[in-house]
Amino acid sequence: MQAEGVIGTPRERRPRRTPKIDSDHPRYKWVALSNTTLGTLIATINSSIVLISLPAIFNGIRLDPLEPGNVSYLLWMLMGYMLVTAVLVVSLGRLGDIYGRTKIYNAGFLIFTVTSVALSLDPYAAGAGALWLIIWRVAQAVGGSMLMANSAAIITDAFPARQRGMALGVNIVAGIAGSFIGLVLGGLLAEWNWRSIFWINVPIGIIGTIWAYRSLHDNGARQRARIDWWGNITFAVGLTALLAGITYGIQPYGGSTMGWTNPWVLAGLIGGVAVLAIFCVIESRTKDAMFPLKLFANRVFTGGNAATLLGSIARGGLQFMLIIWLQGIWLPLHGYDYEDTPLWAGIYMVPLTVGFLAAGPLAGHLSDKLGARMFAASGLVVMAASFLGLLVLPTDFNYWGFAALIFLNGLAGGLYAAPNTSLIMSSVPAEARGAASGMRATFQNAGMVLSIGVFFSLMVAGLAGSLPHTLSSGLVAQGVPAQSAQAIAALPPVGTLFAAFLGYNPIQQLLGSHTLSALPAANAHTLTGRRFFPDLISGPFHDGLVVVFWLAIVISLIAAVASLLKERGTIRRPDGVG
Image 1 (cartoon, helix red, strand yellow):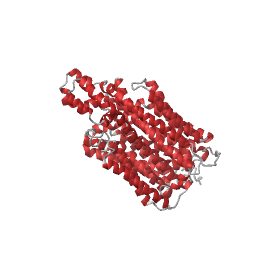
Image 2 (cartoon, helix red, strand yellow):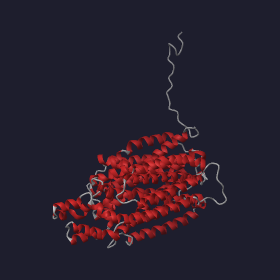
Image 3 (cartoon, one colour):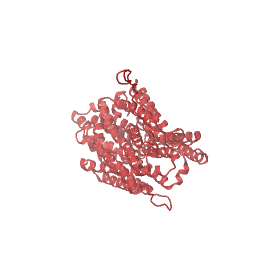
Image 4 (cartoon, one colour):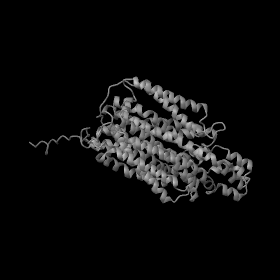
């Protein structure tokens, strides 16, 4: 008789299985960190990738965004994603506390991937094409909100307190750096095809979705609760009205350079604040509140979120001012064609991203050992110093000085972001981490939207004082009829800012082909050349920058003070978060 399994009947082959890592496995925390960092990175890249790609997108759908009837499309393409994420992250973080953080997170990856496909397949042109993109960007923001709202909570659940700062540092810096990586990536992809800025999400989203569903576990504290419908509704309505009012306040209204006297804008601002006040009353009386106001009784949580909001306002304003500075003035002065400036603006801002990437994980690791509070405050003070350096920089600067200052700014952001997040997340009970993560993300995203309204308004106010006279006299000197020059000079400065932001030649846009064709060829060439507009606007633009950067300095220093708040009578905790 032949030996079984040797010559006769073959041994039964057992199917090879890929071992699944349980939540208590030593390697699980690194799996959770890797996947949530990928999710956060892709969500934040997409908050900025569209900014630098807008000229290619509008050319692709054959729409002029600077025509009066199209400015709303431009604003919603700019700010719709950020506005939706600001509104939804708290609700989705709270749902994670109730139903499971990985369930909400995984669904976010799936939604994000599907909407990226829809965005890349826009079948329409002109206004209909813009509406398609805006609607699907809003839907994409829902998926992005699910990722951002729960990633920090999943990491906090997976890591012990002694490693939490390092882990959050990797995740948070990836998120913040993502907003700057998106600028470079968008510029590169838009040069090829505007649809590619959405295509790139699809393979990453598919891999991330499958990986998340197979690998992540709900190992955090789950809190049985009912959905706070009235809290969700009043928060969404109030914050949307407030942020939409700020968005439309940038647009001219009547004879004003801005829209802050527009009745609809005032209704949005006043009504939004009123509804948010009602929301606070509801939340103070609701047992299962979506926005647990009792968490603000903790001074560390309050100070950390105040620092997040203020730091986001300062950093968000910097991003937009640097893009306008580079695209509208510096790059044309240095020989770059206007249509190439979006790509090169992203490339020249790489030191900002490098600073974030260099400091973030290191600051998180060291803060675990030395305490998070001083790292967070020091980062914000260094950020204020970098704003001061940019304030004294001439408009036509030496690039290496500029690069050093934005690297310092990125370094400062990396120093503060992870320790500040660690302070916030370690100050709340385990069952509230989803809501706390969402609240932190809300303050961060709302700060970005607020920064656009605040800094654009200040820049427009600075330009309004000196730009009309400078523009009028410069045009007349090149032979433009006085009546046409005065009419152009009387136009709201926001149009000039948007043109510079989009990488268009503003003078060519403002004069039009009819006026240019009536001028001598040499004058027309001068007016539409690379130097005329930058030389003309550099003085008024610097006046606006002075106001903007002084405000950023003050905001950063106030944020530093807020991050130093600690509970009364407490001493430094041995886990390093104090």
